Image 1 (tube, rainbow, N blue to C red):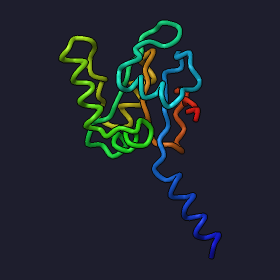
Image 2 (image 1 turned 90 degrees about the horizontal axis):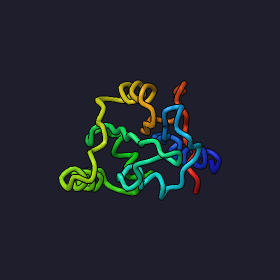
Image 3 (image 1 turned 135 degrees about the vertical axis):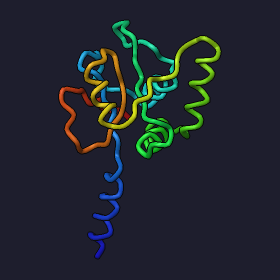
Image 4 (image 1 turned 90 degrees about the vertical axis):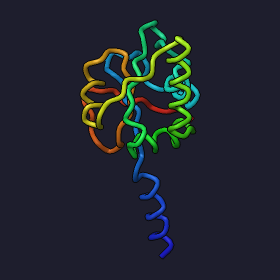
Length: 135
């Protein structure tokens, strides 16, 4: 009985996990949580080689976006949106490019140099590069 409870607990933690994906040209294999948050809050706009970071996101109402925001970035989606609006209205940057759905995310990631986005884990995403998150 104990092993069943443990199995359920492990399955629940895997269920709904997200992965961070980038275009194959991105010169990074791993990011810290702080770096990931800086990228998605538009504080970091360039990769280490100087190339521009292109942030791609799903609509705020999308369940995957909400999960990614809360679990990976430790922010609510409305907080991200507020930060993006500040950048846009102050002239210091543009909001991330919003894509319609997960398949559009994967397609745009594969053709946009410097792009970063996210997807459900457990699905192969060639030729995209999966970023390892350091803890």
